[in-house]
Amino acid sequence: MTTAEVGLSVTHRRYVPFSHAHYAGNLVDGAYGLAAFGDVATEMCIRTDGDEGLFASYSEVQFLAPVRAGDLVEVEARLVRVGTRSREMDFELRVVGRGVPARGESTAEVLDPPIVATTARGVVVVPPAG
Image 1 (cartoon, rainbow, N blue to C red):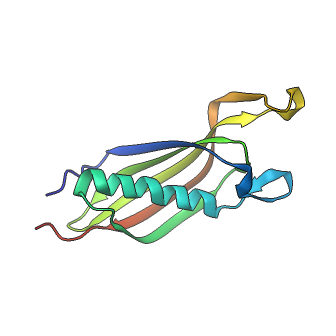
Image 2 (image 1 turned 90 degrees about the vertical axis):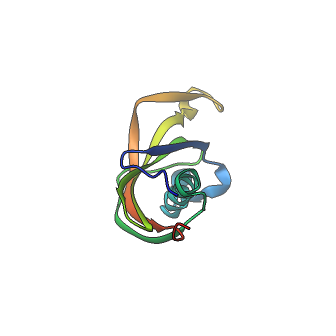
């Protein structure tokens, strides 16, 4: 039995560790956001179907702004279509906090509004009910 409903959302927040920086300026690769999308999709499927589900596809992936080591990010999955076994979701990764090294080594600020860094649509499949 599923409790999946269009509009249901799951949100995670996490600190981006410096161990994930791959490029100059402490930039993090785009795969970091896609992995985070997989995590929120997994929670969505557990909550709605009692199963982790399996990712079938990503589409409409857009990298809109950089994500940097030291950022505080918020990752959201929102159900947009519920099929018999498929769950289509929209994903958004927002930078909600960022370090401000010019003011000191450990200074940071909350970003208002957050920076939308990555968006995508994805499809996850779950086992048949029964």
